[in-house]
Image: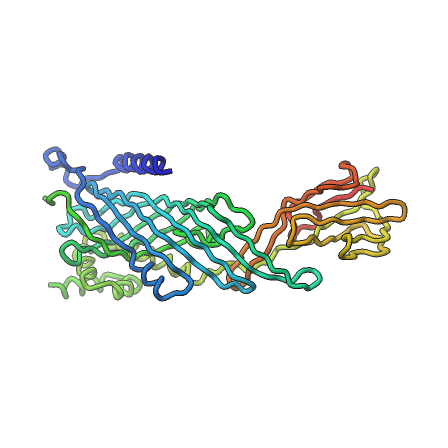
Length: 226
Length: 188
């Protein structure tokens, strides 16, 4: 899976480079050397996940984010854990697992002196999780029946379109948000229970699911900005 | 200078865009104001995307449309003409358990399967013959929403051990559901 993921990342970078636009073509020849050397590494954490984990008894999780910028292109990777539980009308459901996303963002504020970002991008997400449900119902003779069903080690993958903003707030600290449109969910390995909540994606009955992260980043520059 | 930028931006943005600005830090507002000349309409679209998405998600709950059923719909037909036939049964029952039909003349049977298991045996007793059919199926639980609850659906209906020959049984629809009118055809 890791090899396939890296192959996916590099193929997407090659595709995006074909659509790159440069506003100052006269400087392209002189400044091309070293342009695609990594400008910096950013490592961050999603504040919303941490807050939800503290304030909600239905959700527990965290997410860390990292990206490396190559000129206006940012190669992004996210990793997180996600556990949810729902009290049903006739039972109880819980889901627990990990997920990661990889993708590319394109920065539309390349010449900003503070390296602020306004970006569009996409992600490929994958999740591995287990879920379980306990519930009861009345049979044809109106006798109560208790059932338990679950899946272990099932996987899911999906695509995301992203948009967001990131601004420098102090020295090496950046803050910003990312809006996500998640789609094309595929779940594999379902057994006696049809998965209801996929870690990293959300509820499965929605063909398109929206997400929002508010992140705090620490950026480590790798080259001096010209 | 900062106030000038923000005032100019407020004048340009629509009510929705301006309301979104109110929740972001001042540093971000300044940043937005400075770059507003680039393409304000583009920025509004970007800002509105997560807001619109969140709004659309807030009020959209799963449909509470319950369609599951544990009833096998059986049509009785004449083996020669393949037309619907009225068959007299002394009894139809689950051995050691449920008596579903007794002294009934009917052209169809509705037989409940055990939702806690993956097979149910039925005995169809007539005056001159006694047939046994074992229905096998798989169970899958679906959660419609927390307010609706979880429901078990039977699918992949098949006949396992049966005294009826294969040419007298035909599976029409392997999914048990309230909208399905016929799952099995039996030819006598």
